[in-house]
Length: 133
Ligand SMILES: [Zn+2]
Ligand SMILES: [Zn+2]
Image (cartoon, rainbow, N blue to C red; front, side, top):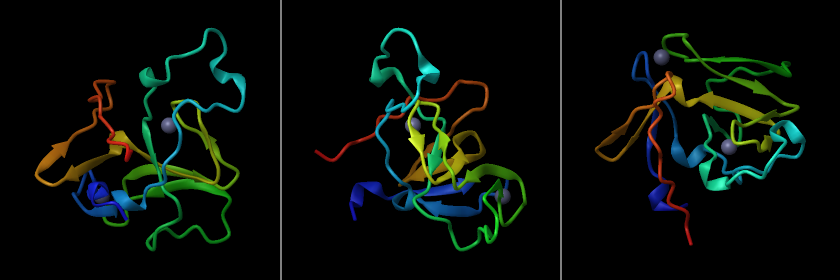
């Protein structure tokens, strides 16, 4: 556990804490395994992830018997993401499998006293991710 990974991910609608940042899976940005992003090589640092990916389903997610579907806030039932056991592609190009994907636009991340808000209209704040080096 890395202390710098603390943070609560809350539903934007009802402020319910959905999960913690430490439950998020990490993936390398821009590791596309097929050429959706064909053409000139992209600067990986310019790629961004529009979603969070969880390493494993959470308690409140009832995914039993399903292979893909939508994820809803357990409190207010607003749609917050999707899941697909066969995987899906992050906006950065990296293929994630299995995919438990939470839209950043549907949730807020609170890290300490700082509230990071992600907007749906593309005005997403650049988030400096502190990689442990
Ligand atoms: Zn990504
Ligand atoms: Zn909610």
